[in-house]
Length: 394
Image (cartoon, rainbow, N blue to C red):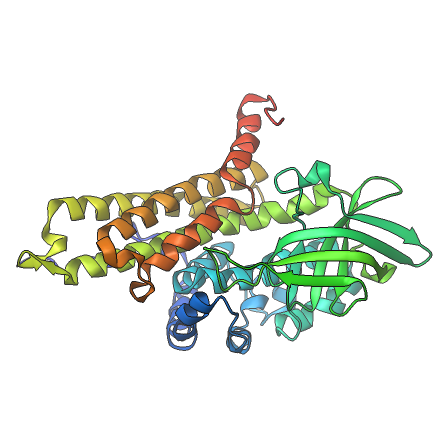
């Protein structure tokens, strides 16, 4: 009697490294996301509008509290759990996962690691409850990969206030966020500092970026700051240079590696299901050798991706994970993800370009995941410098 088909893309059982309670919690989260969030996802992507009802749904899951134990539910979870949580969010919808990641990882992470205790207590509880939504404003119109050395947004101290001037681009959640972490260069000492700009601040404007082909639900914004006044109490007290900013980016870069895995996993799941149900020439196309070859190549990539992100989170748990390891994980997984979604779309043939079959969304979204949080080339140079001792940055 033939063995039943193996439908789990976690072919080597990496999830077995989680505790039983963590596995059970992830099952509950997946079921909730499938039931409450997934029905909103495709229409939101198609219209490029954000479904604000999802905020309350994410708040019920307390998704923003998992990484900040004292402000969350108090339960102890492993760094590996956080990675698998990202996988689950991204296999439902990468755009909504980015909304959550910008709020939780970039904005809250900046405040948690860059602020003092008073600032953490002031903002993070409301952010955990999603009563206030965060954004992270680093990239500039003229500065993406070189924003560290070429940041043009400035901050000038005047008494107990700072005056911010400049522009930011590609700011996720930027059109509706309540708290925007803005990075600016101090005119006095030349160092990059972080500031929390609150919604409605005079001189702050955010304009939605239209016409995107990827992560269409994410409300990316062009932001301008014209003599925006920020009190000293809103300057992140533990941020003294771009190195402090880079620490936040190193943590979230590992998260993007998990995001790439989630995108690849869903593309594979869709392709495998289609292959066993789509009938051509009198039998399911999954029974043809070339289709099986595509599926096995996808699964091989996914298995390798699992290995690198799981090990990275283990190193983080031990306190030994490095920025260079996170950079390699991001560069490798996003490259392999791009191959997986391409093969998945190919397997669908003409149906692969129609949103009804869902794979088209993941195929398109992969392009954004491949590019943000440091391009493959920039992450390659970070790793290259660490293994040769020689800098190849221009």
